[in-house]
Length: 341
Figure 1 (cartoon, rainbow, N blue to C red):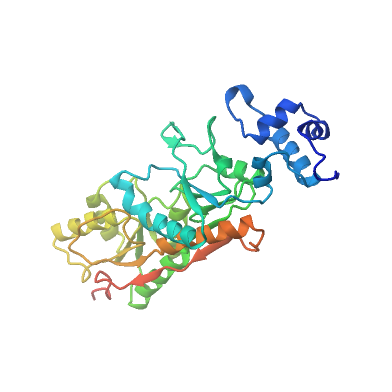
Figure 2: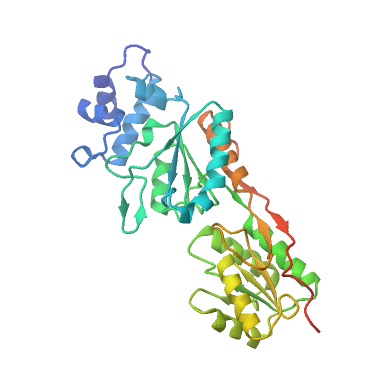
């Protein structure tokens, strides 16, 4: 399918795509309100005609065809401004901003998405995704259905954090290698003589949790004790740990480690002489603790920076690999020692 540049009109696109001229206009202007809802396959058929003819009918379509406007979107699935999440998002956003500035791009924070059933959704009737060349997505949990739609509609995006495939389609991301970092810490404990290990955390529901548990299992094996969030109190967890002869406990969340450490002290135990504790990552919110926990640090700022770098590579057709995992670095701390005799 080809047609000389300058001769293509919306009417031509409509004829070639088998739709009405009004449908073409709505697609080009990204009209997704209820009165102008268009099936995804119809929208894709219109864009395919435009791509294959090599000519766009208006400035928005030209921008979609890789004539970029140097605006990158940022979408967070949790609110970014409350203090409870600010410390989590800040280093990512700092890296995103620094790289965007370095590359001469402006950032557009998408804030119009409504919260439905407790979660924000990037696709809604008034979304303005097409205003930006592409988007960086942040969130502890990102719905697979939205990732699948972004991939199938060929909207350029990169996730912060590793993401599973969306219904079999690979998702572009830059994340931290939690599997390797967790395994390295558990191996270090084993080298000190520990033989019985426990993991405190959900270990599922989101990729970052599953990766930590996978790294734990690689070293601790199937006999490693997993205490999910259903074991609700630190006293109950400590009792399970002591009953199982566990000498080192790994935590997904710092707050859980602090609570169990206090429970151990209340029972006359000393950390790390009687029980070693490892935190699988640095805290996402400020937490005051008398202990300097052995842990690993997550390169959040670098993840944000590389997410922008990868997105720009995708936009310019230069991304051979669209999934990156960055190394974490260990923090020695003082809560890991050889087990008592």
